Image (cartoon, rainbow, N blue to C red; front, top):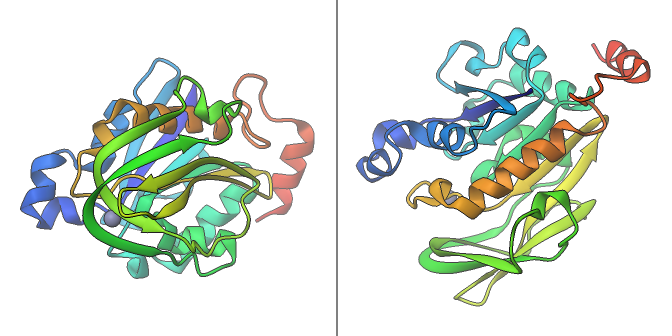
Length: 242
Ligand code: ZN
């Protein structure tokens, strides 16, 4: 079993009628439900919980952490950011979604501003698979489309990705590196662009397939290898990061 924690800021879903209608169980609830399978053991955590729901115990029992945040990045405590970052170094997988590009966790792991261009113009997004052999693209066609999404555009101020899996095109003419992988320490990281809170993006079957594929990719990474267990060498690396 791959142990997954879906983390959400859970702010729009309590304040904004439009978002509440789309995600009555929260974005975390929709993602958890959408990727549910016999191979995954999924829990959710939200920012408003004690220690943002990311206690040492929860992280010790997480192979892959999924992160969605937008308005309240600045209210995530530095202690928890450091805790998550060290867990990634020790081998936990991390999937950062949409506006999570500006989370403290992602920025600190990237080391750049992670800024980008954006506009809310209800444009169609076409997500092109540019690395068809990558496990995160498994089961997809040449591209898939979202009828309406928020637009993100280059320049996206990230380090050059280790692997670029998706590039998005938007009706308005923008392009964006929308599926990027990184390795930090023993952990694997995937950034995936779609998921503005005002659209039902996390019910889209292709989006859910990508997230599910990414969970398997990140869990079977340099760190947690559920099938074989952790190597002694990795245990030794983890022990040194306190
Ligand atoms: Zn957004």
